[in-house]
Image (tube, rainbow, N blue to C red; front, side, top):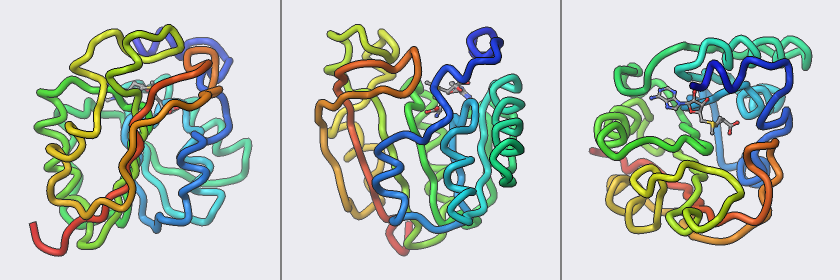
Length: 197
Ligand SMILES: C[S@@+](CC[C@H](N)C(=O)[O-])C[C@H]1O[C@@H](n2cnc3c(N)ncnc32)[C@H](O)[C@@H]1O
């Protein structure tokens, strides 16, 4: 499905970074892992700030476009084609993990999130923006499956080993490509991994 969606030359989520990431990039340090990186807009942005970034995604078509974007912008990124259900990053190798519009089923999150937690160094940061459950009522983007949409309660439960630095559900104009366009309901989260798990 994602390879088909990414098949055209157009960057369907644009080439500019996610705006929540743009506003909060100062909270991040490298190396950064970006899950569900897609066509590369966020990894390329972080690389342009001088951060070492690895983007992982199940779509090789998306990640090929990510590498083309990096080349066009004169930066280097690493990319890994992998299903997040089986992706196992090494322990304590990242200082930050970002998850931008990575809408995943709860059974996958249950496996993946503890692995991400272990891949972070103590004090490492996770930054996430996702459509919220309230987005189900809107036609401005995101999956039509409540299980894949987030809420503050889900974040608190699934990221319980983090100090919450920012957590809110809000409405904002999202203009990040043709599939993410218009007033949207989102969850935004920044957390710091506790020193011991
Ligand atoms: C809505 S796009 C967001 C892309 C990017 N984060 C952005 O904001 O531009 C969701 C991405 O999640 C990836 N994805 C979804 N399920 C996945 C899975 N199980 N394993 C790996 N990638 C997955 C898709 O390939 C797609 O690139």
